[in-house]
Image (cartoon, rainbow, N blue to C red):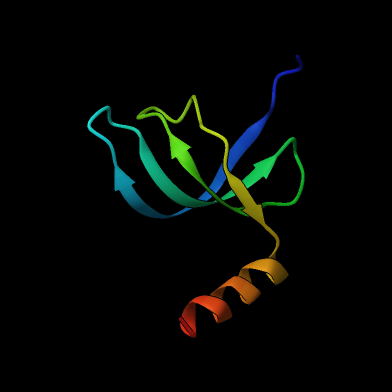
Length: 71
């Protein structure tokens, strides 16, 4: 399996932290040198390992923001 290249372009928030030190975060991440997307997933303390997560385009994050504001 090919390595996945990523760069956390901007750290936005830590949503929670486990006793293991892993944190659930919201970040702006560039995957494989592509345009950055909003990203929600768990990261190891040194940010070298990550769980499966969700990524959102600018348009998708605006829709999600509107949905959350109306809950």
